[in-house]
Image (cartoon, rainbow, N blue to C red; front, side, top):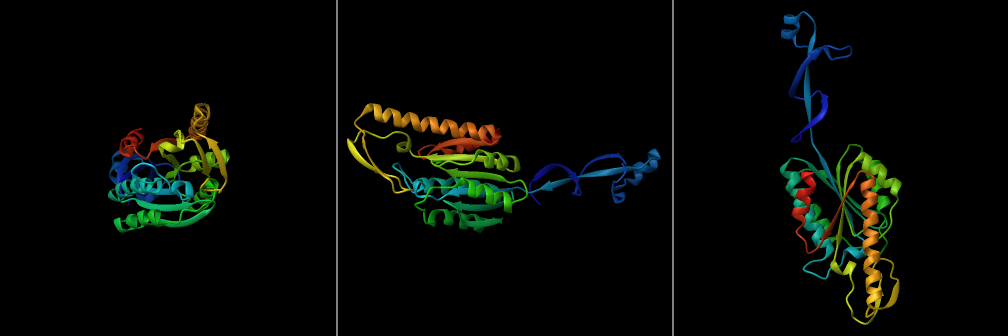
Length: 261
C-alpha cells in the first residue's frame, strides 16, 4: 500500500525472482513454464510493498511553552511536525500523534491525508501545556503496548527530565527512533541580570540566583552541556538517534542530513 519496497519476501504484487521449489512453498506460486523447461519445480518470489507509520511523540509539559526568540518551542515543534507530516502524506504514509507530560494525555491514531496532518498540527498548537514534570517512560510504554509494527518515531522534548535507559533500549529495538531536543538559547546560557528569582515552570520550585557571578553562569552552562551530552550518549548506546535543534536554527538541513544517513 505504501511507496516503499520491503526487505521481506511475501505475498506481494511485485515480481522479485524465480527459485527452486522448497518444502512448504505455496504451490500457487509455481512457475509452470520454468518447471516444464527444467523438469523440476520452480516458484515465483514476490516482493511486498509496505507502508510506513510515522509517530510524532510531543512533550507538552510547561517548559515547552517558552521562547525568547521569534517563536515558542511548541510553535517550532508544530512547524517541524507539519514538514514531516506533509512529507509522509506525499508518500502515502500514515501519521499519528502522542501528546504527553507526566502521562500520556492525548493520542491521535495514525491515518493518511492532509486534513489529518492539519488536525495533528492544531492539536500541538492548542494543547494545554501542563505544569508537571514530563515522563517519557509513559509515552514509550504506550508506544510499545499499542503499536506492534515497527514505526518511524520522532520524540520532541527539551529533555529536562529523566527517563529509564532500559525502556529507551527496548523502544529503540522495536521502532526506528529519533529524539529531537528542541531548546531555546536561554535554556543553556543565562545573561547577567543581577539577583533574580527563577521559577521552574513544571514543578513550581523557586530559587534566587546571583546571575552577576561569572562563575555561576559558567557552571550553569557547563551543567546543561554535560546533561545533554549524557542524553545523546544514552540514545546512541540504544541504537537510536538524537539531534539538538535550536529554535533559531533551520531544522530542514538537520533533518535532511539525518534522512541521508
